[in-house]
Length: 111
Image (cartoon, rainbow, N blue to C red; front, side, top):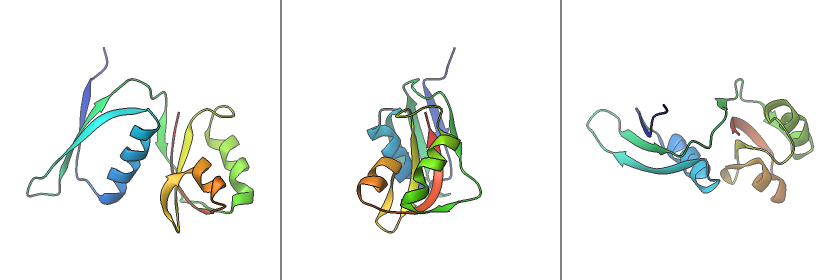
């Protein structure tokens, strides 16, 4: 039996932005930010839509032209999953970065 919710601590603006992107893409349910005196706490409700999720280390710097190479490396099939990356215009998915012709650094993948 899987867990319906998870607690994550400590929190950061980057983690919250990544969770927001995952929620918009339909991988997560809602989440709550609980402020405690130590560094914050996130209560995350799971939907069961995540097959695999991971951090990309080292943080590869890529150009728009190299995007397809990393899609093949980290995602199981075409149009399945997302790669989350940071660009000069903020944290976004690899599809949004392609549309905006942005390169950046890879953070994580989810499918």
